[in-house]
Image (cartoon, rainbow, N blue to C red; front, side, top):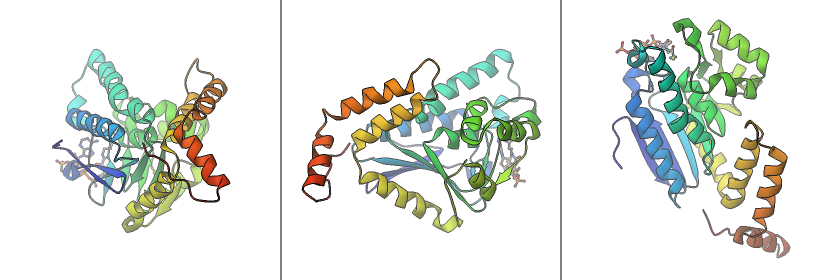
Length: 260
Ligand code: COA
């Protein structure tokens, strides 16, 4: 597939998707969101893609937000539609993918950029990264899931402060908040994400898929996470991966899982 606003490459089981609008600090316009949807969909389907890493092009920004020039003249109806469509095709979509998604936050992750990172299964950041949800400074609120995912990740009080002040936190503050899992010099960021991806790839992708569903269930209205866990746990017992994983342990060898 060819893209105008993103790059997508797959090597050794890892698909790296790069938002590639460095002149606009990788801001998310409609076309980029649609391309990201297609790239995530393709990677999730592909047997060659066991972990997805998303990052931004250049050294300055992961994604500096939704493209403000595209929505500056929207009315109430269009504003609501923008958030609903974006959440459906990209942000909720990523969160619910069965392939693990790591955000490698390599600079500014603001507004829709931080929301994109937060929709991923977890985040690592370079030491120059800056994160925030500055929407109220523009007269709007976060619309791509930020008001829900930020408090889940950092707690309600910190989320309230960050949103109300429209402030930015640096990578170390984000680490202390639990918003990112690791901080590294920028030149080592992709290496770090790939190292974590390699560890993930040693495990059963079928079991990981079930674990993602069970963990996500905790954050879904009307869904009982414990029941989801029981169901997903039980399902594992009917899989080739379970046979291989337990047999390998008992035979004192490394498991060789059939793959995605
Ligand atoms: N939407 C559209 N364009 C954006 C953008 C966004 N969210 N963020 C940056 N850009 C564009 C700028 O307009 C500029 O384009 P131009 O050169 O054609 O004028 C280019 O990216 C570079 O940005 P610039 O502002 O000149 O860089 P800077 O280093 O001075 O400042 C930021 C960096 C991130 C502090 C600043 O770009 C910014 O505040 N961006 C908006 C952040 C935001 O509010 N995001 C939430 C949106 S809901």
